[in-house]
Image (cartoon, rainbow, N blue to C red; front, top):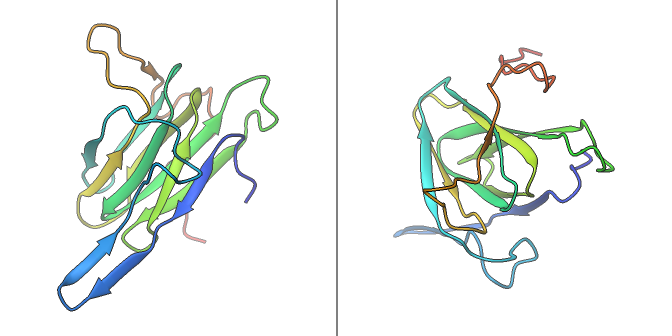
Length: 153
């Protein structure tokens, strides 16, 4: 799959042993790392869609640490070489990846597991309560040609 301009994927390695498991998520010497703003988690119940949003001043680094989610990105940056391109990722326990999402790329996710999914975000800026860096569109906006329904191939 051709990635949207500026999107990067880090394949995460799970290291199991008889005590449990360890998984490094993001290091400051990773290619995907630029700066640290904060770390927070968000969740969604099965079938719930949290979309669409983007940021003017921050990049996001998303990792699904519990359950599975369909994470979808859409490039509406008119001067981008991947303008109107959509990327779709199935991330979580069965596919541990970190998705680096550059500013102004629209993104959202849908919980596709039978239990709540837990998503970590490591944005490059801290959340500004007085002036949030949040651009929002409804999940079914006509500006983004994407159908969130499950496809049974």
